[in-house]
Amino acid sequence: MEAPLLVVNLKAYPGAVGDGALRILEALERVQRETGVAVAIAPNHVDLSALASRTSIPVLAQGAVPGKGGARTAKVPIGILPSIGVEGLIINHSENPQSLAEISKLVEEGRELGLWTLVCVPSPAEAMAVASLSPDAIAVEPPDLIGGPISVSRARPEVLLQFSKALSGTYTGFLLAGAGISTGEDSRRARELGMDGVLVASAIAASGEPFKRALDIATGLLDHDQS
Ligand code: G3P
Image (cartoon, rainbow, N blue to C red):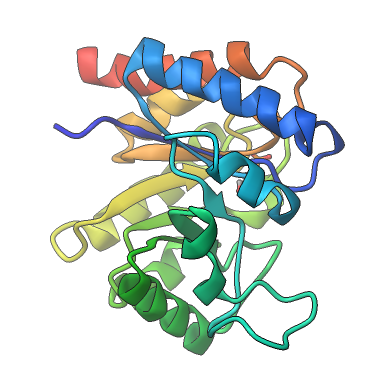
């Protein structure tokens, strides 16, 4: 079976930009080497090019708008991402909500550009509409648990169960859980509840010990396969 997936979103945490982003990248490369878990990193836009040019780990944009490059000040059109080695993007993160029409456009343009698309949804209710667009991955993240101390897999296991039930048989991409995932126990439970991996930010990007935390979370993803 395919390796479970750990996607790390660096957001705009002060310790996770510039040199901090590079340090986290190195920690994640080591975690992938040592565990075999598939890892992807979504740095802040300011670091996309620097990271994409120096790693074989997939680098994802944290978001983009549809369309090509051009006179579009302060925008990141999806069309410019492949030219700097970015391999995919997050769409509709709850900190950057997008309309269904925009999500649909981005998934379609991403496919045409050969980019890997990960669409976030706040609850299983939105997942069916997104699944019909066939992105490469869908992550469910209850907004109120994001950045908090209790993970979705612990606080709301029923959300993950509903999510995987709703999509089983109709959707063949990756199912991810996000919000508060901080430990190996959280990621192991997410796997037990039908997830192919996890989407994590603060526990790795704002912890000051990215290798230790990412290793623990990656090991939890594997524990499920070995049990
Ligand atoms: O994109 C990941 C995310 O929103 C979850 O954040 O800090 O709860 O891991 P966090």
